[in-house]
Every structure is written in structure tokens, then in C-alpha cells.
Amino acid sequence: MSVDSAYAVELKGVSFKRGSRSIFSNVDIRIPRGKVTGIMGPSGCGKTTLLRLMGAQLRPSGGEVWVAGQNLPTLSRSDLFDARKQMGVLFQSGALFTDLDVFENVAFPLRVHTQLSEEMIRDIVLMKLQAVGLRGAIDLMPDELSGGMKRRVALARAIALDPQILMYDEPFVGQDPIAMGVLVRLIRLLNDALGITSIVVSHDLAETASIADYIYVVGDGQVLGQGTPDELMGSDNPRIRQFMKGDPDGPVPFHFPAPDYRADLLGAR
Amino acid sequence: MSETGVSMAEPGVLRLAGVLDYRSGPALRKQGKALVEASKEPRLILDCSAVDKSSSVGLSLLLAFIRDGQATGKVCEVRGMPEDMREIAEVYDLDEVLAS
Image (cartoon, rainbow over all chains, first blue to last red; front, top):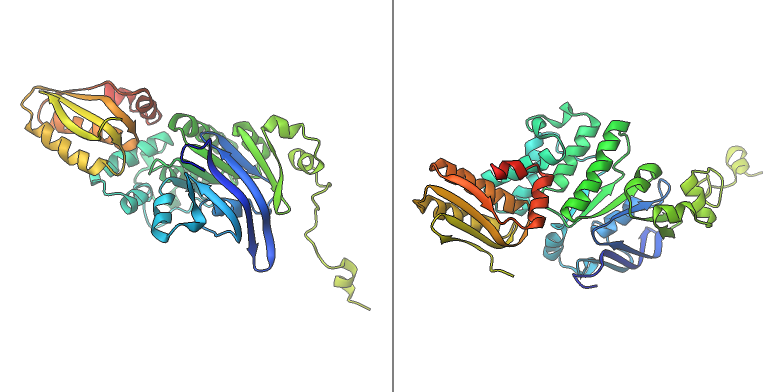
């Protein structure tokens, strides 16, 4: 994959195991450059694991993870540190530093990764907070912010270094409708205006379908389907249809694999 | 592609060129500050027409040079901002700030 590839991220034949349990087996995913791509699937299907593989926080047991012309699992520690500068991550929890105020939270990656002067760091922090509508909250501590505000501060921090790729891990979880609407608008705005490639991992169908240009549906350790939101809504694949329509019964089982219920309760006789 | 740098192209015209990012930013800031402070012109024009690519750092450089100019009583103006740099400025609501 060259730096100029139409894809910002490519997973080729990626497999990942936790112990002896296979989480993904021979998965191929291509994330189009400059688009919003949703990675969807039921809770616990490994969506966040996929994101961590793309960010090289996890190492695949097999396959290749290409980002900007580099196969991440083959990089040295220092090259990986450089490669990560072009990736921003909005964690599910927000992951703000609770003992730092809003300014210092957003300034943190600038202090760690750049040699910019204090005045330029201040300019950039103010710009990022202005973009998420929270410049006025610059002196507040994280425990003084609502859940939606924390997520927006985390977003300001995630774009501090002007990443080429921005990964969102369940950005809509726990957000009220207004905060959710603000986030949806911000993800689209930042993607389009800054030319970012956005990857949104989510099980929130309506919100993700409303902003994603392309969606992968994952489950059972593989890619179940892919396409535009409209294409997936009209899919004949029963697994995709079950997920897109939110049906509890279908090919994706409601129950996690378990021993016989009767035997579990009454014991083997 | 222009070579990345900052220079006083003519008296009172500070020319930014090339790629303005986190790598080039710290040095450009120091060089530009020295050039602005050395200028005796009553006005400072920040010419961006040779900028190939800019991140937030490019916008911060413009703000910093405007502050330098204003500190020495100069009237400052930004010119020739490329379209993609202008779009980034709009995301950060800087279009009016830089126009003033």
C-alpha cells in the first residue's frame, strides 16, 4: 500500500487471538481515505479490538495492518511512536486526565510530541476548544464537566496534533440526544473540512448510519458485510438484516455459548 | 513545492512558504519573530501564497506574527491564503480574526 493509496488503513488477512480463543480470523478491511467509515456489530463482537489493531495497540497473530504505507506490526518502537502521531483516538470513556484542567488535557499531546513554544500551544489549544464549542471551559476540571462536554474535550485533544486518521470508539454511548447531535455534526465537520479519515466504531445504528459513507458489519470473528448504509439496509444477508433491523432472533444467537442449562442448574445425573 | 521557510520578501512583506506543520513550526516561529521585529515598516503583510500545506501550526504562526507586529505598532494583514488553509481557518472560526 502506497502513501497515496485510496485507502488510509488496510487490514489484510488479519487474525487475532486471546489465549486460545480466536477473536478475528483472516479479516480484510479497507478504510477509504477522507471518508467516514463505520465499523458496526453487536456488543462484544470485537469492534474495539479492531480499532486497537489499527492503532497498533494490539499486535495481530497473523496478517498485515497497513497505515500510510507502513505495515504497523513490522515497525520498531520508535517508528510506531511516529506513526501514531498521525492517528487520533477518541476513547469510549473520554479518558481525560482527572487531575489536569481542560487546557492541560488538550495541550498534553502537543507537549509530548512537539517542540512548539508555549504561546503556539496556547493558540492551538484555543483553536481546538473553539471547534468543539468549549473554549469557555478552558479552566474547568474534568469533574466539573457533563458527560457530553468530556467527550468534546476528548475530541479536542484527539485532534490536537491534526491527525490524518481519527478513530472514535463508541462515541455515542451514554450521550443525551443533544450531545449526540453535537457529536454527529462535529465528526462530519472535522472529517470534511480538515480532510481527516474517520473510523467510527459503534453499535448505535441510527447515528452511525447518518454520518457514515461506508459501513463494515462485523460478528463471529469476521466481516459479515460491507457497503453504504442504504446498501446494508436493503441487504438480503440474514445476519446483516438482523443487526440493521435490531431483531433479537436470527442467525446471530442471543445466548453466548454455554453448557446445557438443565445440567448447569441440576447437575449431571 | 516551495521550500519551507519564512523570509522578508520585500520591506514589510513576510513570506511564508512550503509546509507549515509541527516539525517546521518551532524554527519558523523564531525566524519570523526576528524578521518582524527587525522590520521598520509601519505595516506587516503576511503573504501565504507560497504555502503548500498547512496544519493548525500555520494558523498559529500567523497569529503569533500578528501579535509581534501589533506589539511594535504595525498594521497587519494576511494575504494569499490557499483555499485549504482558509477552510481550516473556518473550522476554527479564525477567518474573521485573521481578516482584521
